[in-house]
Length: 270
Image (cartoon, rainbow, N blue to C red):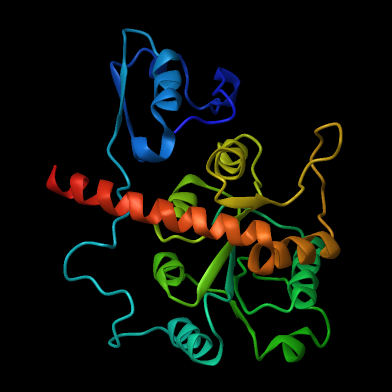
C-alpha cells in the first residue's frame, strides 16, 4: 500500500530521542500490510546504523484458536447490553466512545459530547473517566433506551469485537487504533494529546487507510479547538454511523480485519 503522505521526522513524538535513533533496530506493534513498505522504510531512514524496523504486530490477538469473545459465560453487564442491542436492531449500530485513561476532558466538553450523542440518535456506549462530571439535566432519562454510560474499567477489545459495535469515537492512541482496525471497526478520530502520536495516527487512519473520519479539532490556523460543539459531534457521528463516507470507512476497516487475520496467524507461528 502507498500512503498519500510521506512520514516526516517531525511526525515522530519527541520521546524518541537521540539514544533511540542510535539503536540497531526497532520492534513495531503493527504489520507491514497495514503500514505499507514505503512507510516502514521511511521510519527506518530516521535511524542510524542502517537500523531495521521489525513489524511483529498486531500483538493484540483475539482470533487465536479456541477464543470466543461472545461466549455466554462470565458476561459483563455492558456485553449483555450489547447483546440486547444486537437483538433489537439490525447490523452494527452501536457507537463506542472512549478517550483513554490519560485524556482530561473539561466538563464543558463532556456536556457537548453528551448533547451531540443525544442529537445523533444512535445507540452508544460511552466510557467517562471523570469522577465529578454529571450529565445535563434530564439527559440520562432521555437516552436510557439507547445509551449506556460506564465509569469503571471495561474490556475494550470485547466491546469492539461485538457484532453490535459499528464505530469507535476515540483519541487515536495506537493501542486503541490497532484494536479497532483489527476488529473491523471504523474510527471517528479525535486526537487529544498534542505531544503524543495521536494526531499522526488519526491522519494515518483517515487519509492513509480510509478506515475512519476526522472530528474537526483544529482551527484554520492549526490551533486546537478548546471545545468541539455538539452540532459538529452530532454531524460526524451521523456521518460515520449512517452516511456514505462512514459506509466506505467501515468496508475498509473490515478489509483490514481480514488482513490482520492473515498476519496474525503468521505472527502466532513465529
